[in-house]
Structure formats: structure tokens, C-alpha cells
Image (cartoon, rainbow, N blue to C red; front, top):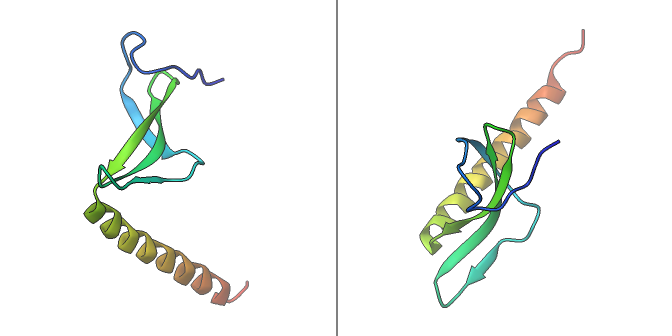
Length: 86
């Protein structure tokens, strides 16, 4: 079972990967930043929550890259359906 901890509690193990939280991203017009909640997964099995902050330019760049990823996934799924069955 994973143990959730808060930042600032003791020494931390290395982070193995980061996953987005199932929450809406937010945009702060005054700060000109977007924020996405994320969960950091540590080598010792613990997880912590944090925020990934984007500039407006980064939001636009990643929107393009995610659109490309979605298209590639659709294409791969279509190609998989077209494979002859054995």
C-alpha cells in the first residue's frame, strides 16, 4: 500500500516518475501561468503531490505535442484493426 506524505517531511527518496492528478488544470491570468496537479512517485514507494507550472508558451507547445500524440495513437489503433487475422 502506498503511503501518501506531504512535502517537507523528512528526507526523500529519489523520484521515479510523475503522473498527473485527475483534476482540472488551472490558469492564473495575473501570474500568466497554468498549473497541473501531479503526483511524484518515490523509490521507497511513497508519493507526494505537487504542481507542474507552465508558461503560456509551454501550454501552446504541449497542446500541439499532445494533439500529435493523440493522432499517432488513433493511427496505430486503426492500423491494428486493419491487420489480417490469423
